[in-house]
Length: 409
Image 1 (tube, helix red, strand yellow):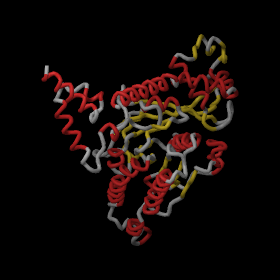
Image 2 (tube, one colour):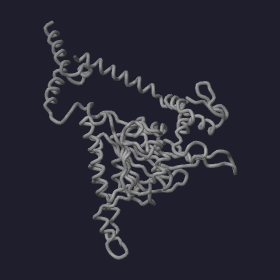
Image 3 (cartoon, one colour):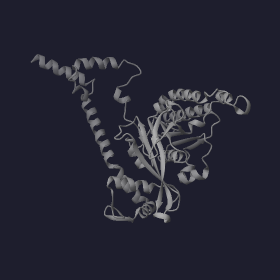
Image 4 (cartoon, helix red, strand yellow):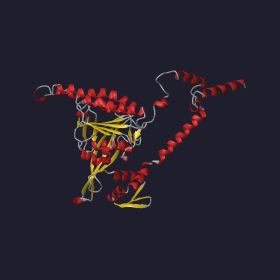
């Protein structure tokens, strides 16, 4: 009897120090051993319990529901690096502006570094509408590689400091886009490249290698910097003809090999590597068909934020040229595609229906109606994304944690 009482006292003592949910599953060791580990771990400086540090991937929902599904985390990952590449004029820059617009709509920051010096004001207003004048939308055309590095560091640190001082909401985050990494040339390297007559390469052909090495060093700084400042960064990279030691993939339908510039470090350190390609959206058939927009495919060839069901996960987004619906991002077409796939919208012949009501005879008619009826569009998107299920899961998880804390007390 005395032995049984002693065991009970030991368990009670341990549960005051070790959470009940841990103490109740100590088949791998004694409660006394856990108790001693707990006492020592409290004295270790600079560490926290693992599950307070190694948390779930944080993500920001975007205006692209099909991309959000493809990432596996419900949006674009925060605190991480992503790299976007693809053929010229296929929608890379439009895609990153869509990501930036998503951050602005939620009351966050979007910093666009236009190293290409090509994004015009009128095009941005077409894509971003009233958010082109959002106070959190900032841009820069950098003088050099060093100028960009310093600007990114100052930007994300300023936001982190503002959060700590309660000058902005504690959940405020930011997206930084560098468009493109190829155009950033260090000042010292630029002098070497232009050394000699007619701007001959004074770096003896080693310019790309030197830039790749600098990119790798910058990435070493960015990985912890983005995590601790709770921000995200996207690089746009350029594609080149393939070489034996390059990072390679195949362009769908063409069997054409290519490589991505900027050095292997960009691929290795990126949590998301995506390739943007496009096809045309047409209305009608044959000679009478007209182009009314573009359907862009975002092929996620690498991810470190979620498991992949396929070798390449694909998300899509659409843009309109203004002939059917206003020019810019074609959200209605994105939502309709997702809703059809999720079974939220049904198609019978050429008719589309939602909740027993017809919403259009043909894709173009359905897209026009949804574009004009934003409330209906929001409802369909919410159901197609399955918004209610994640909320229920979050509430259940919160209740479980509250019960565990109450048991510990």
